[in-house]
Amino acid sequence: MAIRVGVQADSREECAEGLAQLVDAGYVPVMLPAQVTGNRWIARAVPPRTTKAPVDDRGPSAD
Image (cartoon, rainbow, N blue to C red; front, side, top):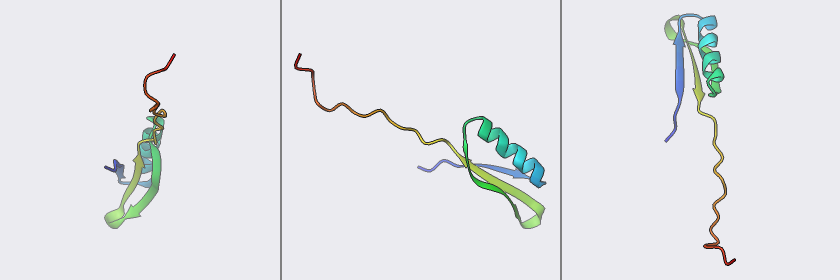
């Protein structure tokens, strides 16, 4: 499942500010502020990639 968070604003500055708040919260920007129809601005961010710890599949220790 892909998780994306979007910012929609009336100005580029407002959109950039919203995106900056997401970045401050740990999200990674994937779409910088862009103007769309009707003088609206959008930007998108995603949660950071997580790295799972390696799985130890050797079974119980033989010690």
